[in-house]
Length: 224
Image (cartoon, rainbow, N blue to C red):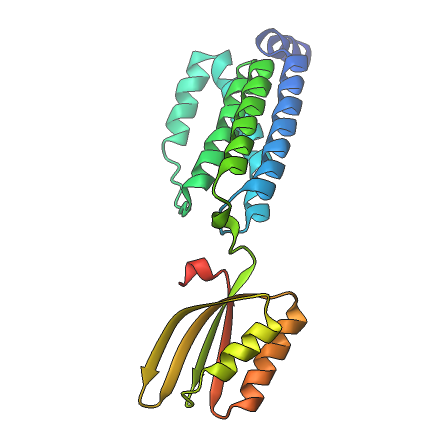
């Protein structure tokens, strides 16, 4: 079989222009979904890094569906090949799983030559997600960009710590205080106006109170 026959057989089984259109639509929709997820997502993980997987996943799904629909034999072989693949990446947030299913759905719809249907469905879903984002209780997002501050000290006078935190931080909330024979161990949730404010707060507490340690961790929801 020469090259001309191969090209002719390929054109008879796959419309190259429709395939390119499907790839473009899948790319645009995945990019839009990724931007929406980074802006309005609630996951505590790195949303920007996670969203970079949307376009490759969608295009891969488009390719798989395009191959499957051209031949029953190819579809059976592909199913057998994919059955040996094991994905062991843990999905820690249900929201991540929802967006992955949306990306796969984009690939399925465009790969099946339904780019308009995919566009309408994705836009409709994004509108619903945006409305849900707006009507949700805003207290869910009140703790964004906050830090976990733990102070361990031999002194039992916590007023000095609280005054320093209130002076340097925009928001201070006491989460836990353990009184021990050797001193106190206190946990706060704080919102800092800047990195310089965090450094100044830590330096002031350590220098003004002997035998005191200050631990600061981002993303307090992972700890407290």
